[in-house]
Amino acid sequence: MAQAEFRNELATNEKLDVLEELGRKQSSDPPTLCSESDPSDGGRLAWATAFGSFLNQFCGLGYVASFGVYQDFYTRIYLTNESPSTISWIGALGAFLIPSCTLISGLLYDRGWFYHLMIVGSLLQSLSLFALSFAKPGQFYMIFMVQGVLSGIGMGLTYGPSMVVISRHFSKRRTLVMSLVASGTPLGAIIHPIMLNHLLNGAVGFARGVRASAGFVSALLLIACLSMRTRALSTPTASYSAVVRKCFREVPFILMTAGVLLSQIGFYFPVFYLQLDSIKHGINVDFSFYSLVIMNAACIVGRCTAGIIQAYTGLLNLLIAAAAACGVIIISMIALADISSVVVIGVAYGYFSGIYIAVLVPLVTMLTPDLSELGARVGLCFAFTAFGSMLSGPISGALLSSQYRWWIPSLFNGIICLVGSLVFVAMRLIIPRQR
Image 1 (cartoon, rainbow, N blue to C red):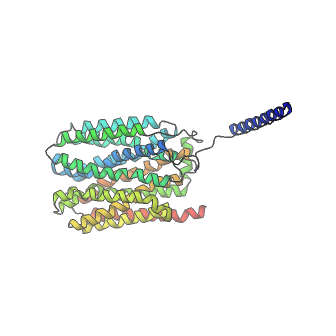
Image 2 (cartoon, rainbow, N blue to C red):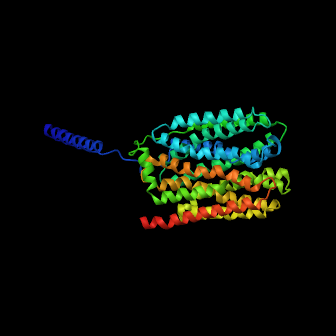
Image 3 (tube, helix red, strand yellow):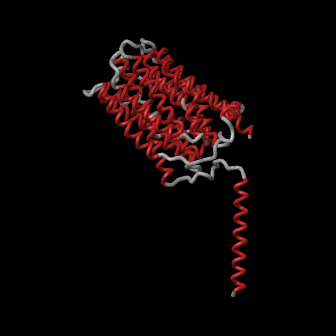
């Protein structure tokens, strides 16, 4: 009996020695970076984070995408002394700062500043909207600074981290979840225009209407901040400058950035001008108010289905098709003349633009071998492509001119989108050769 107990104790000690040796080996190995199998691919915290990211997209880019309502209101009522091109700089600057600020927020995100970015960015966005409500008719520069600069910076601090954090919770379903999160933008671009049109053009007026909108956005941003959580990963193995040098040596990354830059120049033309285009063609004003709603409803479908379609086509093939389709549809805006044409253009462009936007961040993720550098890579890509977003509205407004010659900006923006899709084709041809 004593011998049996001695054998059992000896076997137990041997097992403990083996476990300790394995532990020493694992601790001596360099820390592993986040791989495809690292994220849990679900769970309560993961889906709560996805919900918070969805709300952030709803309040961020979803609000910017509704600038067409402000563009129409400022042009006809509030800033009548300014040209459409000048007014469009307000929305264009916001569209520029959101992706360009990811150059900073992506770096800070990789260093573990996720919660700080979400809180500070949400506060800036909330305060800027409340401040906008105090602007008076004709005060272009105050509106420009508050709605363009301050709000754009706030949204920019939260946009990149709220998308990239999904990669820390999901692996196999990453593209699908990112697509669902990205659908928050068109949903916001449905709700916000309806709300703003009724508030600004109704009995409530500009000041109280913007305050109501600011309160709604602030409440949702608070819920988003309370919902999102991040997972601790190893710190980046390379410095930020090393990541930049690495990116500039990767031809696919360079081509992807160039293609998105070109496509973004034409991308915002329907977003900013479809409602005004509809009104200027004599279409019923009440229906024209819902033109952006139609477009963004289709955009939700596009973003939600992008994650499913890419499983059969591949991310890059889907991006090429979506960018080319957007270019063709923008050119077809030359034929806009009645309600049916507004509906067709709104539905078609909304769907394909939704697919286009939904696959951008997953594509950057696919081209990132080390996920601890993902924030920096997303920030670097979006910082360059932000110039396309900034130039889109003013260039379109200048081409449109005070005579409202719609065929010129339609043709220009459509062609520039098609050129961007050709750059994606070149990227598609290069990737198999490098592999």
